[in-house]
Amino acid sequence: MNPRRKKRLTIVITLLIGFSAISGLVLYALSQNIDLFYKPSEIHFGKVETGIKPEAGQRLRIGGIVVPGSVKRDPTSLKVSFDLVDMATPLVFNDTDPTVTVTYSGILPDLFREEQGIVANGTLQPNGSVLASEVLAKHDENYMPQEISDQSITKEKYQY
Amino acid sequence: MWKWLHPYANPETTYHLSDRVIPWFGWLSGSLLTIGLVWALLFAPADYQQGDSFRIFYLHVPAASLSMGIYLGMAIAALCGMVWQLKLSDAAVAALAPVGAVFTAIALFTGAAWGKPMWGTWWVWDARLTSELVLLFLYLGVIAINNAFEDKQMAGKAASIIALVGVINLPIIKYSVEWWNTLHQGATVSKLGKPAMSLEMFWPFVVCFLGFAFFVATVTCIRFKTEILLRNSSRPWVKNLMLEQAK
Image 1: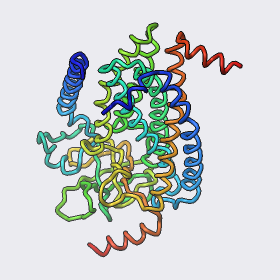
Image 2 (image 1 turned 60 degrees about the horizontal axis):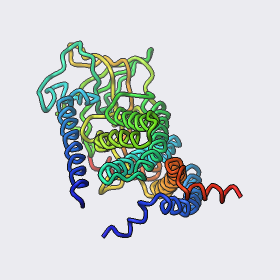
Image 3 (image 1 turned 180 degrees about the horizontal axis):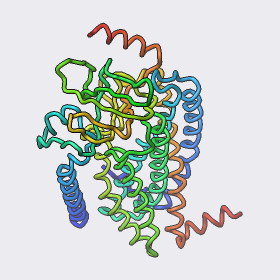
Image 4 (image 1 turned 180 degrees about the vertical axis):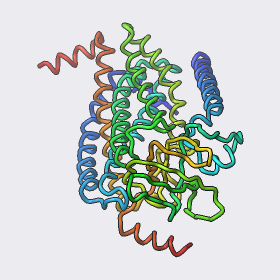
């Protein structure tokens, strides 16, 4: 490679590394703001990196898995409440896991069901629950036809 | 080592090369897309949870991964253009940018159309969706700069810088779902180890993906040819070519 090309290549690579370092640092500094939601354990104990806990009255999003058996619907209105627990693979529910209760009044997305990932947008109440104004379903990355799903669900049911 | 590449620095040789490969790419893309889309949209089994609406996967995922692949190709062309000062690299950047922009727009649109019934919202400012939107703006920036200068060489230089700097966005898009909490799900197809998709749904995806990839190759070669002609319009070989075609 002739020296002029070599020089240009060095300049370009240096620039690229410089810009990557800058954007890496910026993203690292902003990392808590880029997270779309709090996990239920983070509402109880604070973010892992900083330990900052959200305050009552703060608008936030919470994301987690709907705990089986926790969905309570009001028979006379659209009010519904359910508990969320941290997302983990594989799905295991222990009684000791920190949960956060979400209350919501409105129509839930079609994918809403027990053991489904949910992201709710709302305000943290003084009693530690979240009053949601919007509930979104988070779909996981698994796709399968009905027959396979039936088999794997029965298998998982046997595990716990 | 790179001797065999040298003839292709000549615009005329490269023009004729892309001319020769276009029909191959075109037929491959046409047949693969026909097979893949019929298989995917009519015969692949429906998802246990999403039903038939999961089928947008066969358009959304190829479009999204190709939008990133095209950008990587464009950035490599820009790097070669800056270091070796090849005029053909500028033509390649100019040829790739609009194709990539369209595929990014398709990925964003199909994602929104799927998000409304599945998530319950068209759009959410999470890391994956936002960084993909930034990719669209990067493409639009490259196109705009390419057209902002009278002088093609100046335009090529400026556009190459944007294309190269924007490459930082690619790992951010790819790993956004792992680095941060997002509403967007993690990777299905490139997930290592346990497949996240049953095989009878996965194979039609492979065919669709290859079909779209060859479609990108076809369209890019056509655009590349046009860019070469535009940039060499005063050369005798272009004049001869035009005179021959006019006959």
